[in-house]
Image 1 (cartoon, helix red, strand yellow):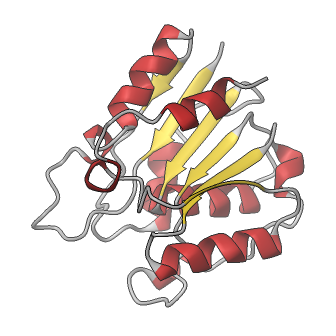
Image 2 (cartoon, helix red, strand yellow):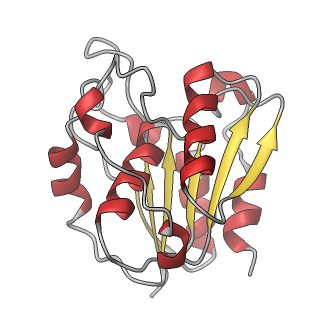
Amino acid sequence: MKTAIILHGMSDSKEEYDGNEAGHHWIPWLSNELGTQGYVVYTPEMPEPYEPHYENWCRVFEQFILDEETLLIGHSCGGGFLVRYLSEKDIKVGKVILVAPWLDPDKDHCPKFFEFTIKRNLVAFTSGVTVFVSKDDDSDILESVKKIQAECDDIQVQEFTDKGHFTLDAMGTREFPELLEVVLKQ
């Protein structure tokens, strides 16, 4: 069975957190599109996204079965989480897509969340890893992408100039056809 797990990013603060990070931006649209393609789609609400703790995110994430047919998509902190999780586990999964992955390079938001070493051959445990990045995103995202590219072999990069952090505000739409195209590409 084809499954997809889509992980949201980090909320700016507890006060701004509305209890539905997974319902923001392009995630609902992509979930619907993948459903029409025969995927069972999960968009878990990760605990305390305003102050994420790796172990707590693992507890939620590990409720899902991961295998070579599992598509993993992570936005921002969710993408950084996937890089760490897959670097620390010896499991095989399907495609992995990291949208504006964030690794907190300045270690000023959640430094313990990203205390790990990126697995050089991480891609070998997947059906391919693609990173989506926009040159007009924040410098810490651009630094995170550079680190992933430098420390991990065979990463594919889709680069944009005008999508910011791939949020509704930056993109002006909930639709993300470029992402869907990469997902569905054989």
